[in-house]
Image (cartoon, rainbow, N blue to C red; front, side, top):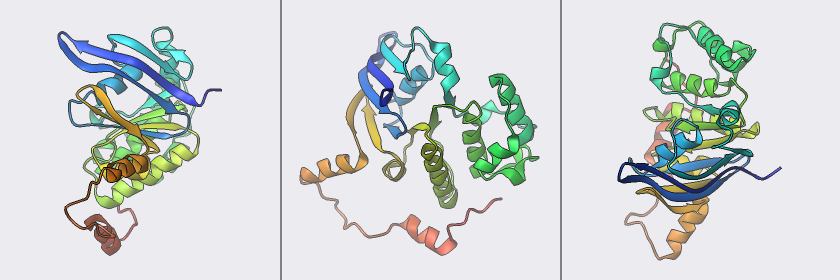
Length: 253
């Protein structure tokens, strides 16, 4: 079995004369947390949507766990989990009902309580989606990516808008999912998040990959150029102060 679960070669996506993705190539290792980073409009979301079979590519090759995107898109759909945005849920259904709904779409027989336990939401089983806090909604969103027992899950900015406790709680959840053997592909605008979670990151700008390595090695490469922060780096930051004062325990609204 290959150590690479995703292989992308010379991927291009054009919208008329505009080149959104300009011939990028990268691999994702089996069982790693891989970050796709870049400013808005860099092409990272387009790249992920192509791999997720949600958007047509212009050219290039994509292989997901041995399945070629051109030949077996339906097989790829069976082995991936994609985080839905808020609009993907019926707000008046409770969590148990939503899980049964999605399980039916995947033709999976799943115990909602086991799934909710995995994201610490058992006590919200009968709560409606619209009644939950931001952190609870994000945890449930990640839970739905696991319904079809995927080999790979895609998380698009999963901690945006969350308070520090909820954000760090979600980090632990993502680490737990990876520890179970699932490969995780994540996008985020929080560089500290990518540094904590990701085994490797690809940085995309203007449709091209401009760097690809582990966070530690990318930082070391920058330091080796003589780069120094204009301000002395302290041993803690303001988020550490916040967590230390208010506690690590996740608070539910």
